[in-house]
Image (tube, rainbow, N blue to C red; front, side):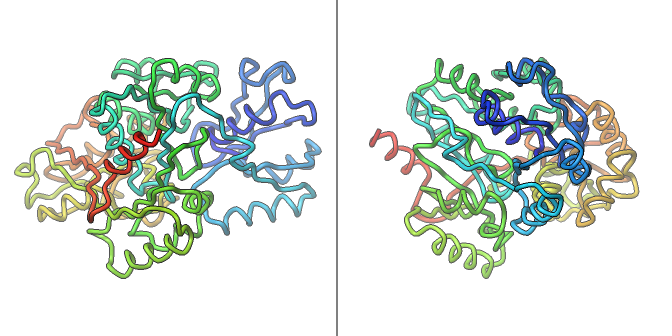
Length: 431
């Protein structure tokens, strides 16, 4: 059971050449347009000369019986503990065993030192943390390569090993908006990024040009590579989630360093609750409190205006947040933020129906050319003075926005004495 990431990795490292098992299917959820793909022969290996079919997860009960499955392996992330057990109940009710694969079964070992940045929820602030650490390492003269959690949403056999160094690589691999949001800011910071499907090959290629490997985790999954330093980001705006989401709570318990982020905009009681939960779950971890510093491209253009706030899609959908950087910046500048829902078309309209908590912001969804066009149409039809872009990438690079647009970016800033830089330098010193 997967979402085009952890499921493929679990297969590659545990099941692919394992003659004790026959993998009869993958199921897919969370990500649009990935249902009914076939895991190709070139990735599936010699035991699967015809590849492996993929089905929508909603067909799971009948698939267990039709394919005579003995065991179902849950292999995706950023879901509540309750959700996991609800899926387990469906599997058990249809006669199969339910299983999770852990770090010992799935983590690869690197020849280089590894710093992993993971989180307890999508949208916690992991990406600015990765960027900050990357800049620190580069300033110290280290050759840094970032290995990013997978997002192989296109043709799988074309995405076995992907290497990103400049914007042309984003076009080369036909990246979705979500992929661009993760890769482009790292490229902007002079970091080489590897991703794809086969992480054994990805890691070995990355090691050839790196002194240090950084794992940039996505979707609150745990690292595919065994870390020597594990930094986990929690979100003070979602108190309690650090204990009740899979596998974010496992990340929290394994962490060497825990960053409690967004302490400036969260309720003080929520900050206190998250700090208490972190200390109770992991007594040995160093704790850093932090905020996200917003940088508005041209504040005069939007101050006091009627604006449309466009936000990072996964933060709002997978992450369950109702607002993001664009909304926060617009409120600070006294803007009137319009409701985007009346202007939504096609799949964007469906997103608002599926994620009912979204009312005042537009998620930047773009998993296909058609959806990118629908997003562009939604933005351009909105009745407003300007557009505030809170995504990690500049949407204007690959779509025509007909209104004045301002980009909002954010960087991690520590609050207190414990700093990321000192932890990274101590880690390298000890190595």
